[in-house]
Image (spheres, rainbow, N blue to C red):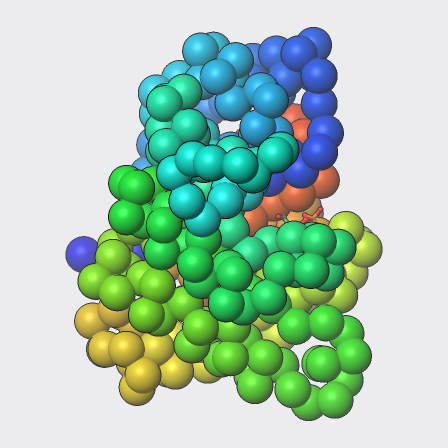
Length: 248
Ligand SMILES: O=C[C@H](O)COP(=O)(O)O
């Protein structure tokens, strides 16, 4: 059984109810490849609303969460709350959480562990900066970030999707070439085979994220170790349907 292609649409801090209605209507119109898993990452304030209007065939994800069920953590949301409004995914460790909000590997791992034990599925993000890539540290960085997640994930790899998002390609229009992305995905899968298990390596889905568009998706999707995408800007546009259908 192959790995089911999975495409995430991370809306980030964008949208209002009118735009959300347009995006969801576009998704309803599709047509979306039924063999592709689609998950949309929604601003927390709109999770319940989106869940009330989106077809059940489309997963709904929070874009972040805290690492305990409840308490004095002003402004945060918990996995329990995410589930309470019917969402069943959460995106964690996004590079914007890491670079803007200072989230380190250990905090990301604590969040992943609690999200999984709370019954959420997780899109866990990793990726190097341009400085790290230019210093030849891409593998060192993504292996370090992934290693931090291994104890947090435990035996729950079937509930995790990894998203390799080179920071230098996010929001820049500089998509990684298909070969650049494939090389890191293959290297990561090999690392997983050695450091977790061959079965996990074979089955875990690794998304590519970083300026994916309708024009670049097909060539990326054709690479053997690219199992989907985590899409930012283009997920707000009608071309997101073309990205979902990139394997057709
Ligand atoms: O989560 C999505 C990634 O940050 C990619 O964003 P982007 O497609 O706007 O480059």
